Length: 178
Image (cartoon, rainbow, N blue to C red; front, side, top):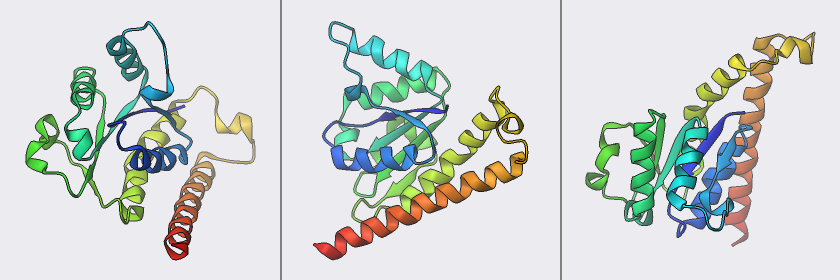
């Protein structure tokens, strides 16, 4: 399975949860350092090992994330490991302070209305998922002889679309109930 390291400030819990759910809806494993307690272990070593095991770094940049030393270190480690980096940047962040991320295309997010940006995040991660599917040792033919790769990808895409729709409806229902 594809593994994503989600770099973020722990002060952005609600935003992190939104991004995490969107990525997981693609069938992707999401690593959050705070969900992997290893007492007595070097935090730096734990983070580096998790980044090495991940295929992609998704970095959530909010005002808190921009001021987090860990976020900047995780970006540096991911660059050194030549991992693809997908920055998700809050519209309220001063993009002149992005440091190493200034040369990487990013997704802007308005967390008061995140649906469009989260759909773009799905679109950004999907090619990695498709590549992972194509390189898996288990072929789709062995799993379902009547299903070819194109059919499997269409079903996968429909699942992602359904997830976006459910998320959109849930967001609309939550804002209407307030």
